[in-house]
Image (cartoon, rainbow, N blue to C red; front, side, top):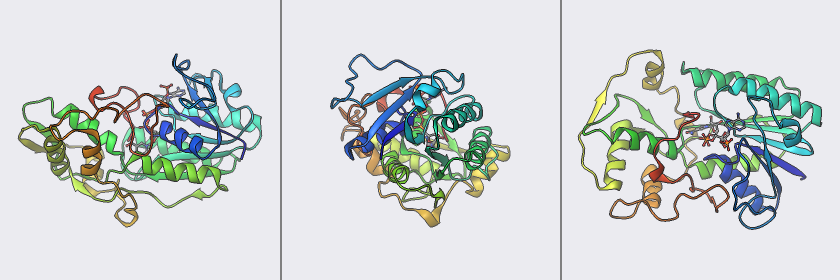
Length: 293
Ligand SMILES: NC(=O)c1ccc[n+]([C@@H]2O[C@H](COP(=O)([O-])OP(=O)(O)OC[C@H]3O[C@@H](n4cnc5c(N)ncnc54)[C@H](OP(=O)(O)O)[C@@H]3O)[C@@H](O)[C@H]2O)c1
């Protein structure tokens, strides 16, 4: 296997994909809009072998990022994902016929959320790209549920969407599967990947509060609209594919000490050893950007 480009290789999922591929001895290049961090050490222990600065949405630096890649793992997401995917696919076609592995979300074809519609449109672009392709859909990462909890727990009463459940999964487990798929033959749409448990929002919120040693009433609120009707129906869940092993409670136990403080080293910067389960600094609060999934 030659060079593997990971778009979004600085994000929650992508940086774990990068780390896994590196551990397996693959030659990896990260695409980011930013220049490499000062401590980035090409070819060293602290970072992948190469870094390409470019912007998929603006189509800047993408030909150089894609050049020589045998595989592209497309984890980048943000505003303008459809345009971004178009630019990536065009550059990939010019570069040869790399295997394009894309991460999507369970229920993008069923829950009418704008972000999901764009993910579905990107799936269609990938499928019709003429490139060898693989698409994996996963449920929400524990990190996303954690960020939602952190935001909602700032209020004296913690509101949660009523009669909605999630099936959160460890981003490390998704990264492991995506990395495995990326280095294998193009597989088309593969079976969905869901977390080990389907749990109601109030339960998830109480797990978070318990892990932080905080006390708040949890208030389920019925949210109107077609999107939340879809979430109430469970159209974003895949109980038949509950293949994840790490529960939300186990994820929280890794992130917070027994007295509810962020566990030192549980987060970390890109390339700082993001093994399965590693992710952004849990004290950093909600990320701006994609609001992925
Ligand atoms: N979060 C979930 O619960 C979940 C569940 C299932 C599937 N997914 C999917 O998994 C993927 C990764 O999600 P995530 O939560 O890991 O994302 P994330 O942490 O928000 O990271 C987004 C990444 O995209 C890059 N990016 C954004 N705009 C870009 C642009 N214009 N050009 C180049 N790079 C750009 C960012 O890199 P820089 O900032 O360094 O440029 C960053 O690395 C997404 O496709 C998402 O839909 C997410």
